[in-house]
Image (cartoon, rainbow, N blue to C red; front, top):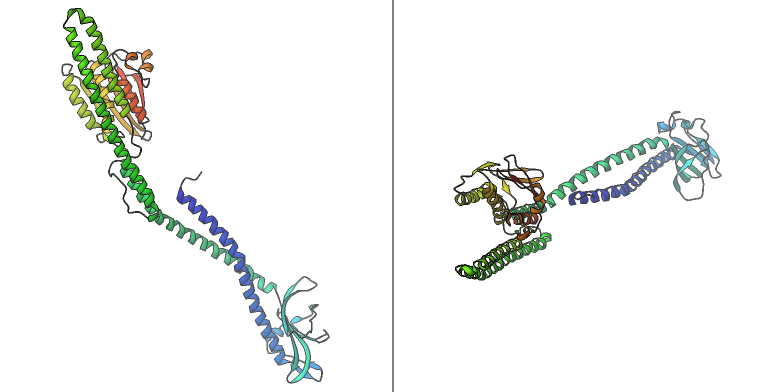
Length: 447
């Protein structure tokens, strides 16, 4: 299937142009043949007039000079033949150029004046024939048919050459036409390329909307896309505001329950119940945070955000170094300086934050973060030198949407959030053994 619109249009135009040229060819051939036959008729008519001017009538007998004014009638190897017939169709004179060639043409003396036709003799030779009837010669009554003939083969080479030239001219005209069509389509599609560039800028976040500097036929499309972009932006803002309001409204009663649990814990007799209450409140708080994060994971349909990876690592590592300052964790980076990841900033910070927090908490003293970009997309790797994850638990940890109460101990809820973030970006998370001795989380994102 041809996916290029310009190629489709070009193929359609080519097909129409070829059909037009093929239909035009027989018309031109017929026109040229008609024009050539008119020229032949005029020439043979002039030759017939030459014979009439040389003819004399003696009583009822025709007298012709030995040497005719037109030398072609006198030459034996000439192709021009002159014949004169009486009204009964009897041949009364033939030009020396006819030699001893058999002549089976019979004129019709019917008072029609003259006629131009093609005649094929018994040997299969075709002639152009001009037959002129005269009833007066040099002021004397006469009744003769003056006939001039010339083989059609003399003009066949000219006709073949004309046909060949027609093919060349039409072929050249077709190539020129196709070239002009291609240039015209290229110029016409310039507006589409401009629209494509603007869409790329919208996807990359360089502009908020499309301009109206496009052909009239595209303005409806650009206006619709602008309405879609604006509607999407407002929906995302309302969605985030609603989630923030929901989180705020849930945190307050959870904080009250946490306070009640602490109050109950002051009484030695209620300490066990208070501990159960505290654990359940903590689980509820984590589940609320998790579900709110999952609900907010929505990749934009039109806008493709890109965030510098190094800047995100600086922010996260700076915060985690303060939290785990007693461990003196060494973070090794192996990534291009200007690498940008196709994710929103909040999503990227949430994803890396969960993986780095796990790595900081479980490592002994070293973490390695590496990244690369290739034709297949992006790959980010977070490794540590901690205890690692048993192979039997990896599939369970990476299972999308795994709840807190079914998570592997020590992994918390962060891995499930990472899986959900990557799922919203069509990404993939793999858990392997690290060369450092601990766990290796490998992230793959499409380009």
